[in-house]
Image (cartoon, rainbow, N blue to C red; front, side, top):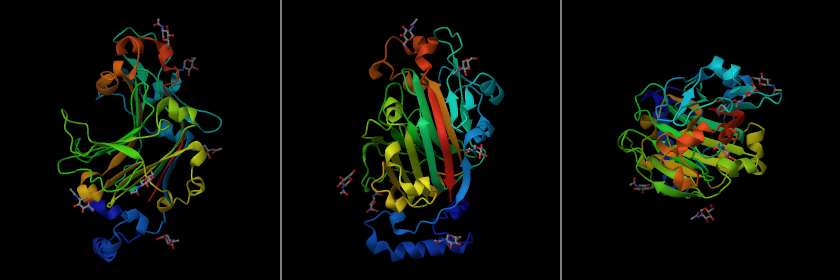
Length: 333
Ligand SMILES: *[C@@H]1O[C@H](CO)[C@@H](O)[C@H](O)[C@H]1NC(C)=O
Ligand SMILES: *[C@@H]1O[C@H](CO)[C@@H](O)[C@H](O)[C@H]1NC(C)=O
Ligand SMILES: *[C@@H]1O[C@H](CO)[C@@H](O)[C@H](O)[C@H]1NC(C)=O
Ligand SMILES: *[C@@H]1O[C@H](CO)[C@@H](O)[C@H](O)[C@H]1NC(C)=O
Ligand SMILES: *[C@@H]1O[C@H](CO)[C@@H](O)[C@H](O)[C@H]1NC(C)=O
Ligand SMILES: *[C@@H]1O[C@H](CO)[C@@H](O)[C@H](O)[C@H]1NC(C)=O
């Protein structure tokens, strides 16, 4: 598939011979397979796209009904800016907020924002720095990527940050077309939740890891000052790391990222159980906050939230902390 040719970790020329060189390298290292492939490769990443500040206001504002059944109206760019739901401060921090000014009846929808990147990607090293993420009863925020050219689940979905309500442990999930499983042979810092990545409308748990630390999502993440989520996506697999604010490696800060130095990852989806290149391609990067819907709704009571999720949406006070504060997202290839 053409997408595989964009794997650039080896900085190979994008010619038909790239496959052969890649295979040769893999065979040559077959006897040192105790380390994931990414750790055997020299780091040499260059910035493909760097999104900061006003850049996010140029992303695509999705304003159709929420496909996950959430009690939100995703507003267009102009409405988001006019109503203060998408703002940039003097430090170039971008805020994406759930509306706290509207009067909404119980069962009604509250304004929110869902944006996606103008570029699509079939591989890369993605580094996202958030000062804050949405939290609170009724919320279901996500930082994820999804195919812009295939019909879900074909083309795949990578959920890097996702959870609901009062969760403080992040969940990292892949959804894919048929024949893709998580081969759980590489050590991570997370708990395995499921190994079947193939998803359908009625069976969409995906293959997933839940992070062990309670500072990886929601209020826990925010109280630690936020941090960085980095994920490396290439034909060897998809690997996700998470660094708290006070533990961000200097190679990330100085824009010479070297994943081989980052230690045990939060999630690893090796290509051993899933041909990553043919299952995941042409992804846009998406940030959104929905309310209730297919996940935060059913999980509302068990999250320890009071009353009903519909009533929570009607009370604007519940959403003062339902905000993404984005420092930047950088894509390296
Ligand atoms: C990184 O890749 C570029 C482009 O292929 C090459 O010119 C450069 O020498 C490489 N740097 C290192 C340190 O390998
Ligand atoms: C703020 O972000 C814009 C891009 O949106 C960039 O051109 C500008 O240099 C940034 N300013 C600072 C102070 O970082
Ligand atoms: C609420 O309204 C105020 C005043 O118009 C505005 O500054 C703010 O951005 C709005 N915020 C949200 C999250 O709705
Ligand atoms: C797995 O990683 C943990 C740290 O998260 C470490 O303590 C443990 O020794 C590792 N296990 C193996 C088999 O590498
Ligand atoms: C999982 O990966 C290991 C190591 O690459 C391999 O030996 C094993 O056969 C794989 N299992 C499955 C089910 O793909
Ligand atoms: C709205 O929610 C806040 C907490 O977020 C709560 O203190 C307040 O009582 C709620 N108001 C109503 C009318 O339910």
